[in-house]
Image (cartoon, rainbow over all chains, first blue to last red; front, side, top):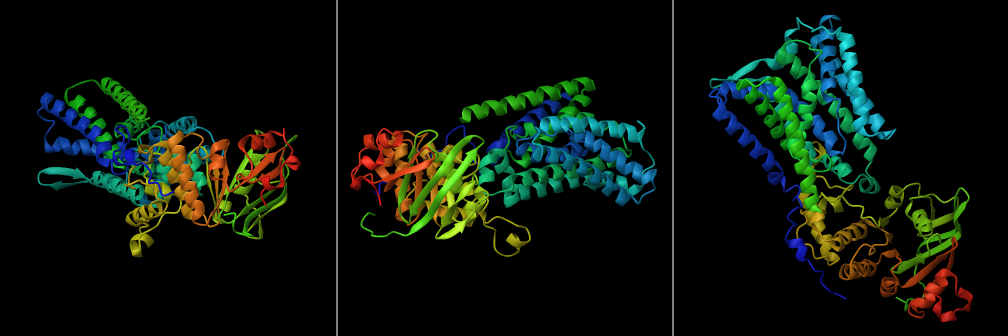
Length: 334
Length: 266
């Protein structure tokens, strides 16, 4: 009657299975190695690469993609994908800059309106995914095009200039030693810290993982899975709005053609960072490392004088490599 | 178990009817579950076995009929309502999140928060307490898994099922319903889960066991509810009837009226 159950497997974890969340180090190790290799390679190619100024530049360039990648990570963790992120960011940027200039709105209010518009698009994405149960891929493909067209129509395909100083404040820099850092970088890091805390330490964050891991089981334990999904899409939309502000701050203009490479770059960053496209597995810090990898490649290739077309090519190869690694490790875990 | 004269009835259903278009899945089915027993529910495909279980666990709402829980008439509109009423269900296809830890799975949707402002304002999880509680709950049921912070997918199928059963047992106030809990398991692992089901019963919970596996049914069941043609054909006493006669009743080859009186459970 009182037989003790065999627990041989319990003591030694399977090789393929991630020790989650204890496996943080393992999950982030891959992208960190990729980052180190990329840095080493570019350091040998360009003397300028390792300078403090260039390091700061990479961080500034990464801020936009980095914040987009936070929203993207949330969506991908639930098992979805958001193709609209870059276009929403461009739309948010045009809305906030036009509202502040053409409409003469106070800049703080205009910024909030821009974030409001991207959040609203996030809400539409979320409602279509939860209420009509459409695949996120096709929903966000649609909103991506709608947002792109709206951006072009509203801006008249013209760049918005003469922005109030508050709008570009996150582009201002401060020095540590002889190196300049932008406030936008600080904002990005703060958002990562916040996302890390929520995903790891709160029930709401764990439910995001649970929904992506096994939606049916999560529903059956009484979690409102549809609401979790809806909140994720809205929060992602709001984050894209923050990315709009970072982009506007850095370039000093409202650019209707912003976000076109950032779209794929954000997805690449998330996947490179080890978050599974199948949902339910990943670490937010990985996406930051992934964004840095993407940023380092773009920066390093530019320093080497490689045409931007090749940078796009490299990003494409990177994302396929990362997804392949994900798929193979999944197979190994079975 | 059979020494007790009149065990308390925990859950009772009378004349449940469920139609799907032209198909009558439940045609006035009755059901009775007593405290501290394992009641096996068996039946051929289409006998109304799974419709009955769905009605009891809140997955479907019967068209007519009445369900009583501890003598009180209840209506479940969803599995979540049944769960709140103290009925936990272990699903055949392992309703767990494989990439999450054992402790997280045990407390999924019922997480504990840290005391004070950390839990109140920051809404921080009390991971340590959940792990300690998990260790205690699994130890109570003698499930030999050491680390609560390992991902569920690192466990064997039987161990995963044990975690699912332990979760149900930990939170059920009245009833644990198990839908084919041993179906996907090998002999040894199946035995491990059966042993656990007995322990759950011995802690005083009423267990409903749906199974196609006759040896498993006969190994653990105190009574056997035979579903046939959308009704309850009879309730059998596994100690007084053999497997082949049971299967004959289930398929209709043998009428319950023709069985010796002692073969029927009371």
